[in-house]
Amino acid sequence: MKIEYGMALWEGIPCLQVSQKRLEEFTPKLWKAQEWLEDLCNKGEVGFMDLPFQDPAYIVELGEKVRDRSQHFVLIGIGGSSLGAETLFHALKGPRHNDHPHRDGPTFHVLDNVDPVKTAEILSSIDPGKTCFCVVSKSGSTAESMANFLVSLELVEKTVGRDKAREQIIFITDPEKGSLRELAREEGYRALEVPPNVGGRFSVLSAVGLFPAAVLGLDVKALLAGAARALEACKTRDPETNPAWVIAGLHYLHNTLEGRSISVMMAYHERLATFTDWYRQLWAESLGKEGKGQTPVKAVGTVDQHSQIQLYNDGPKDKIITFLQVERFARDVRIPPLYQDRPALSYLGGHTLGELLNSELVGTASALAKKGVPSLVVTLPRVDEEVMGKLFMVYEMATALSGYLYGINPFDQPGVEEGKRLTYGLMGREGFQEKGREAREIWEKRRGARVSL
Ligand code: PA5
Image (cartoon, rainbow, N blue to C red):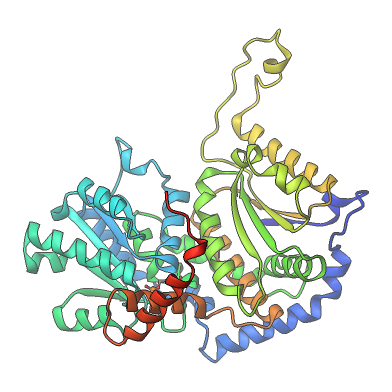
């Protein structure tokens, strides 16, 4: 994985960019951030940096068993409990996996939202008796995941009976606390662990991402090896080669010195579109606190060139763009040299779609540079398990370090928790009646700001 920024794109272009020199001057602060993070890790308060070194044998073994026995795999979870696995699925299997005539392993579905149409459609497309349901919730109480669990449980029990149903359901949750852990203890559900010191959005390299990866037949060891390698690079004390420092430093400086409050991640490979969803959650939920943070925006090249780029070029100067570039695609398509007498078509012949995609990236980045919009290019040699492991770890490190730079705690999510409590109250959960009243009262007061069609 290579990261480019600064002068290569900027030379000779007058704009308010953060130069390499400025980033170097900023190095002592990045170094302090690094020490702070390593200290938290050494004290056992933060655990995501330990994950690359775990022994995944049990997780892989269980995943392979499920893979052999199941026709369908339904992941129930939301936010940090689903996005990592979904990213791996899309990046390494592709969104058309389920329809593939020679598909190996079960179909893969995610019940994250409680959109009734989505849940009904997914559950009616599978054979419940031949499905593994994996319920992922660290807290064991998130309303969406618990609701989708109950709906699925009733369906499986009706199909195969109570005892068999328990064999088809696997929990991934806190080792001690929460309702899923209690159920696992009391009713014998199988359960894997989310380490207590690993938060949802930092958990993709724990059982939360590794178990679904094993069910999909992915190379879990390569994923962890990639993450371990990236971690090594993220520990070097060099602002030019430490990828987490480059990402954290540039975003922080552009945000605080130039007011660039939006971080766009534009993936020039559709298989990485879900990675930008994962990044969006990680960046937003970790850093959006105490009036600070940057709004992460998802974009896909080249599609969003025809939708967003006008705004990025000529709109408010409030963005920093990250381009995700892939050097070698798993497949490429040659463009045939037809209509050689027509200049609008003939120049394409003999090139490949991959070449065109990457030329569009360079063209777009250059056009933005001319307008003084800062960007950074993250180049991936290919998309495989090892590279995905690197990508996850680099962004987790950059996010954690950014927390220190902003002076906020990147590992909590008080804003999410409050929304959860208000929903519990509205849905009548015991102990949350007061929260329910509060939510109804606020809702009533905002009548004027509602439009009904
Ligand atoms: O990153 C986080 O902590 C959150 O996005 C959680 O993953 C999400 O709210 C789901 O929580 P839980 O795993 O407790 O169901």
